[in-house]
Image 1 (cartoon, rainbow, N blue to C red):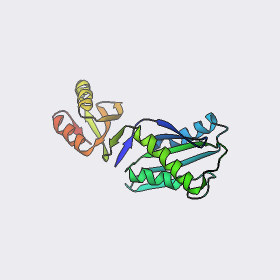
Image 2: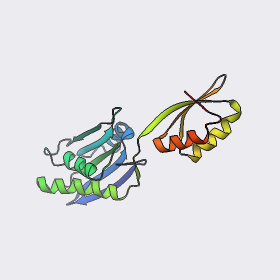
Image 3: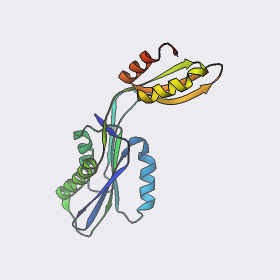
Image 4: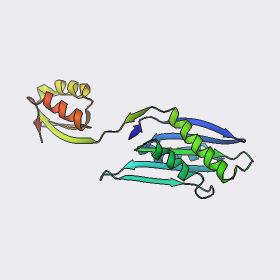
Length: 190
């Protein structure tokens, strides 16, 4: 499975109709959809599809034709995401009607092609299940832990300064294990 970190966009033109595809991290889906509706008030359709992992590691999928004939836009867009193994990813295709009807086959091809184009122009990362841990350290070890977090791609979600320093950290299982092994002399795992 793979995912993206940045918003990518491409435009496909078919018989004067414009298909502007936006590939985004799923976390930005709602906000981006609202912004696109404001930016493109004259667009005819906002076709969407997304796939993400829920808290139980189940894949949740959804697509919307947004007024296009049923099954001609959202489902083909979702199928492209499935075929590419995309996860935690959404696509929004803004369509401006060009005056020529494309027919059901033409719509399926146009939406699929638009999603494939934006995928080709995107940078993907391999998905690895991440875990979250809380660790406790002395104040004198903060710089050392910050440095090692960077070295092992461990994300510091939160720092709490109290009698000791509490870190909430997040990383894939392998990075977390290597990080904790390296810093074990100064860290207490909670």
